[in-house]
Amino acid sequence: MRLGTSLPPYEKAETASYVIYKQGNVIYAKNGESGAVEFSGTDAATVIQQAIDHVADKGGGKIFIRTGTYIVARSLSFENKSNIIIVGGKKTILKLADSANCDVINIVNAQRIRIENIEIDGNKVNQTAATSHGIEINNSSNVVIANVYIHDTKGAAVGVRDSTHISIRDSVHEDTDGDSDFAFNVDYFEFINNICRNYFDTGIAYFGKYGVIIGNIFEGGTVGVYLGTAGVKTENVVVAQNSFKSHAESAILVEEPRETGVEPTENISIVGNVIADSKRGIFVRGKDYSGVRNATIADNTILRCETYGIYLDTLKPDTSPVVAINITNNVVAFCGAEGISLARTRHCLVMGNIAVNNGQSGNQPGILLYGDDYGEARYNFVIGNKCFDNQATKTQGYGIREYRSDYNVIVYNDVRDNLHGGIQKAGVNTVVKHNIGYITENSGTATISAGNTYVDVPHGLAAAPDISKVRVTPRDDLGGRSFWVEEHPTDPDTYFRIYISSSDTVDHLFNWYAEI
View 1 (cartoon, rainbow, N blue to C red):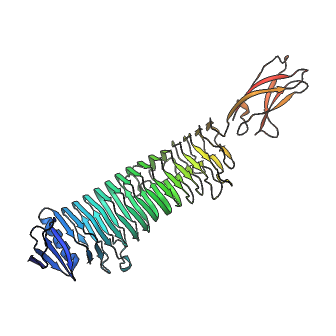
View 2: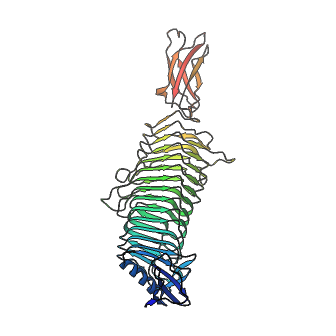
């Protein structure tokens, strides 16, 4: 109803185009400049929509909704509107009416919309539509959602599709039956300083370009942050300084696009996050499409995951590769399986990480390079990591293990104090050198005593040496006798054997060098 007059009690004009307030069961929309009440009625959605439409017709403005609970039976629509700000009071609540089965706020084909300082109650127990979101944004740009408390939605708290320059910040979203939030095919997306709790599916599912997900708290869902699936390329995304706890699948999941002809997910930075008590910490996965490439996983702390701390995996390394992933300076501890696992990856760097007390469920290693019938982990560099177990009963099997893989480089790591040993190597072409706690090359002297034709030499290596790489040089005249080296017949992991062709009446001294 359009009134055009002020309604007692008359209130001083406020700094908004319209002021929405309640008296009893009646909702009023007062002109913020004149103080005149222009719209009123018992249907909150109708009165608020009238104010929105009138502000839009004038080219934009601000609507202030005072403290109170406003039951909305249909969506507040911002379709084809621009330059509108909606601000709530100390406790302004927009509550979806029973069986409304719609979004509370719907922003479509709109520009420069801002919603702030409002509570949205999705009233999910009295809805049936799974697409009933708190706020739906579609084909819009320059939309800001700030300091908005959204809870109990049948669908997502905020859902965004096919839009650009969207910012969701300083808000609390909890108790949603679907994703807490999603942004599909959205470029230039900000998700900053939010709290997402108790969502059925994902904290924020994001597919698009130039996104930042920074400073949020994610707790109690299936996945915390989900990047890269659907039929769009996801790239140039930063996931940083977030806290994750209690996720049934993964705290952070990065996937390839699930559609043929779409380029790989790439240029993802996962930096400075704290992850605890989830099934997996960070999971990067390729399977059937173009894979994932050029990502950074750095400076994260990952604790007590049920399985892997950091897990990179592809079933098709040649066609759906997980490639060129840099895993640096992370701390991964007390995980059930491996601290860091690379399954069939190529050209990845694992450097400067600390993997401690992992293998809680079955003595898995701190770092694993894994291969099987689907393919090998190849051309990966594992450099300068510290892998150890300081528990009274150790669980972390090897510091670093290579399984059915080859052509990797494992150097300058500290792998002391693990249950089974420092490093287990599989590939004949893999380079393992200069690791603390896993000696791969050694040298010394040995003496064949007078009257003997051989000496057993304790080589001090982490495993049996490659006999073809054992070099022996006599230090005195053997009197024409020949000499050679053989693998020790019973204990090659401890000794190798130097022979001479016949015994002598004097000792003979040899220099030796051996490597694995």
